[in-house]
Image 1 (tube, rainbow, N blue to C red):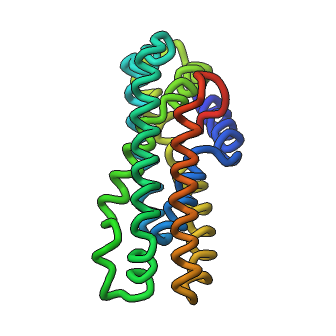
Image 2 (cartoon, rainbow, N blue to C red; image 1 turned 180 degrees about the vertical axis):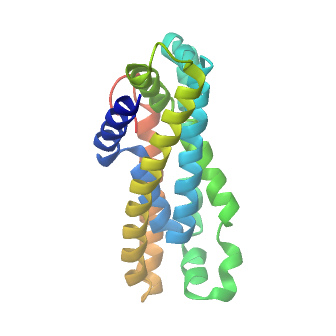
Length: 215
């Protein structure tokens, strides 16, 4: 089993290190609302992926793999949520820039819990990552041991690695954003760019098929 876990961890690093939807979402949130809230979104996204792992364990991932209708429903729900987040970021970009420049105005920003919830919903409603897990996890399961505990353990390993790498991306984007904070106008433009990126990510999810990159 230790050999399987090590092989799984190495495979996860190889898959996760390549920027995918989770990375784009982390960077977009950092640009739109700052690194602290981006880190909350990253944590929520990791939890959403973790819930997907549990869903795969009870067979919901297989349902998405077999049912085009179920895949489409989840896909459009996730895409719509991303678009809403992007539009909201664009609409409130001026207020967000002012809030980040003035601690007294931070009430206009999404709260940390709300940022975490956004990340959880985005992570859980990515059907392609669920399909990826259906194909990926069984390769590292020990057929001689109980499946449930193994899936939970592999899920913890995957989400921990994803959390670490996505946090690095969010911190990097947040640091770059801090430099733009010297100019409220530039910060407003940058916040709008983060919103556009989220809309683009949602549009990409809405037009995707059941193949291709997922994480």
